[in-house]
Image (cartoon, rainbow, N blue to C red; front, side, top):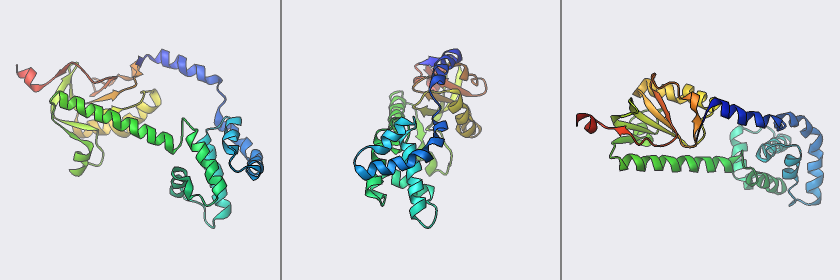
Length: 244
């Protein structure tokens, strides 16, 4: 689905009525003792999850805050980010069994943040990369994938480099990047800065496929060498076609 900016802004405006969760953080300090009282009565009860829901805060982020506080109080040195991330991915590493269970409940019940969601996003992204690879093979297009390019010494690469460029809607394409997400203004501008223009500088013009659609007005860099599509193009013109 491709949305106009007006349509996207209309949807975003509807979310304004949702209370900003980060403003609820000031309540956590006062509510923290309630967590201790709750788990003292029943360590298996979803006390931390219910607390997160009550203050309208993402459960996995709540779990991170409580885990950080716990480790700060029980360790000689402040916990590193890598240690906390490792414990969130595998709560069995948490030295307190009750807290480990509370963190686990938060992680598996969070549909927006946390290591479980990250795994799902990674799996969906990989699935679409495989689908794109199959489509390139089906079209008999010769390419190098990200792993092959890194083996050649490239440190920042798109998902696929076409060994023989093609044309899509009158634009030459040297590379294709797969994004299993919706292209909104914030994410797209970040991708432009961090990825797409770097690809353009190294490999020339390319194609970005936002499999879940994008804001139509963002497709404004075609003449500069970055084309946006919401699906695999069906009108690819190859060198063989050009010669014919």
